[in-house]
Length: 202
Image: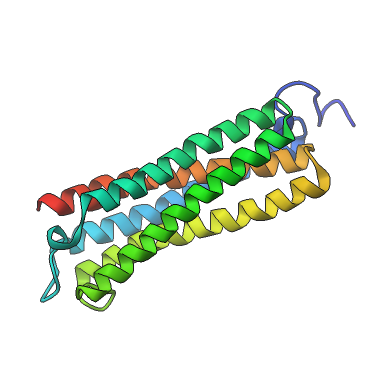
């Protein structure tokens, strides 16, 4: 390994020039994701309250359900951080265990979200019901699809970890998927605040 491209100090995922450049590139990708979700939030804000003959959000949003979903996703962010901590310590077993816990919590979140969508549809609030509900389902559904993508991505990384162990390449992939997961949690906080909390009181 050449001295100008690699280093033996710092976290494993940053020890090669390729690793550092890939992580930088992913930060740029997250910037594009911010633009995507900002557009969806702006659309939702413009269409807020335009429910036509469909139920109003205050009639359907339920705080216990939303709190459970929030607890599951935010806890998964914490367990993801623990997984990265074990990776930095060189503990493959700890990394795998806590990454699996993170994915289980993410699956729980998706399960509640699917139940929520089905419940709303039965109550007369679906994608074609009104402009408001279209904006709601597109925003929250896009976030849910991102969570599903994150879970699928992490599963593939778990397979690579089992086959190859902790290497600069696999550790970089774990770190990147961890960034992605934390990003989705931040987006959910905005959804929880601007969609559910406001929707319950207006």
